[in-house]
Amino acid sequence: MSEYGDPELTGEVDATGPEQGFGPSDDPGHEEQAPEPHSIATYHLDGSTEVVTDLDGDGFADVLQHDADSDGTAETTYLDGDGDGRLDTVLRDYDDDGTVDRALADTNADGRLDTASADRDGDGVVDEVVSDTDHDGQADTVVRDTNFDGRPDYLARDLDGDGVADQVVQDTDHDGRPDQVNYPDPDANPYASI
Figure 1 (cartoon, rainbow, N blue to C red):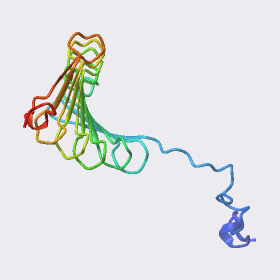
Figure 2: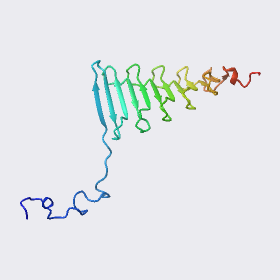
Figure 3: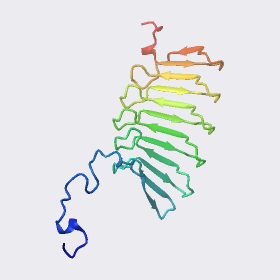
Figure 4: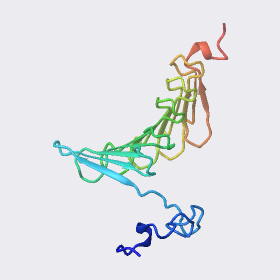
């Protein structure tokens, strides 16, 4: 026996077997734990604060929050909604009340925003959605709740991608059923004479 108390350090014991160290990797007593969120806060001289958070431990930001007045309520939040390492959703709180007023999202991961949702009257309910449904980089569908009753009553669609609404459907009496259809673009009007 050597002067060292640990037999592994002296080489007197074989430490390569599964009964040594941490045991085999399939040992049910050694389950992997979910990574802890990691945040970095930056305080700027203009009084604003930015907080970057990696929620899943992959080394990429999942949430970036910008608080212009450092009151603890972020006015702008960027999110990685699909976990691909790219911030693809923007949440805006224009009046700094803690409620999202506008949301912008890249729904197909092409790097361009496809959907914008807004709470135009500040009641916490989305009143307008503007979408690029064919992912060509140009908005082609608008849905609005014009009287803020929680039900959409206006739909405009640009079916041919020329930037002009081809069809506008409205619920003018706000009874929940569309009652008016207009075709502002004469090129797309199916009732126009040629």
